[in-house]
Length: 580
Image (cartoon, rainbow, N blue to C red; front, side):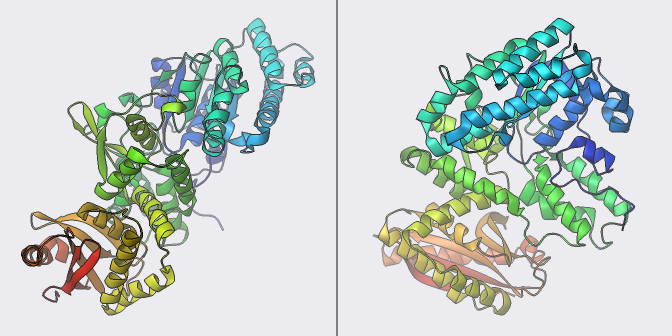
């Protein structure tokens, strides 16, 4: 059964398919002319699932000489239809996607050569009409990818055919080698006579234009002498909004589906924005753009949400696209390359517990130095685990972008805690249900406090109030009944935790919570504890009366709870005032 509106192209990276099937498309073609103005050889890094593959596929269709007569059909209604550049449909395009090479590091050179050979054969067939008879057969006769590239290079220059190279996931399999085999295997691949380095040497004289995208600048830095012509536009403010969606893009999408009647009347534009903004928004990729341009939404996440909302009539139960949880595995491997120790371990804990860190973004660095403090921070930024959230003199305030990324950090901490003291998560889920549905909160908080005790008693991993908060945060996120809001401002102060009812998914939740955590060193006196408790009661009473907080309860009963920890023992846990 058909619909009267365009469907969301969730998971589709084929531009011609998106257009032929009349799917919804956010126009990014205005960046083609900006890229031409920037230079002939460009390099851009963006986090995973930011629309890189679809953008490159669209760019290929725009510059491909074979698409010249289908230009109007493909680009009608888009910016470049009315503002074409002089290079439109001028090139023979070779499109390489190195994620298709495979991850078998034992047969990597063989697989890479096979993939490159296939792409060259495909290129020869696509553009055979521009070359003498026998061109396709000669390309196919050659056995290896490098031989085929060299032959195509000579033939194209002889025939006067300009070539455009599009490389997607340029660092995909090299990152796999680094993560799985370590630095030595990676070094052999990208240095000296490594086959990957040799191929990059062929790119320099062969192509008139090159655009290369990936998720980190490490491989490019290590290939520098083999490929030293690329302009890195990763942090260029002209391209800050080239990938991902601005809030205006998202609002236009919502209005389109509202006008088409695809979204229920009681679901408003603002309610959707309020729902997704804390989870998908807040990316900034250029220092000069911070505060001047809107932050960017993760486009894949927005499409995931809208696809559920339109197709199923309701927002997804899980706001985090399950497909992105594979990214958590990549984060974990990144953090644990070689050994996890020293400053790097502290950086991960600091970021998780306070939500930000100060530093500078390094534009390029070799793999052997990736775990130095500045380089490691930069790598987290390139992977989308940090973003630009402020400027402090010469330093950037690098923040966790949103709740989706924050969960990935919490999962890392949880794995670390669980490796020390295993927790029965089924039992924990039962306690969450009792707290959410019946207001029986004490078993939940006591269980988490006992887990904190058991973990720190086995290994002095956690010390101090901020680390306690990180621990609590990690365990409180193990429920879908609540949206956990740490450090939310109420009554001119910051509440440690607000367990905000996830009423859109679980309208049966009857109880909400604010938690104030207080930490005492092991040698604190009874007088210290009494004074601290009084301060906590005064604070949480003020938070509970805040009008902003009251407006967010959605009819649930509020429980203000103070937890006092001394060393790693919970010495007092009480509800204050029995809030309404």
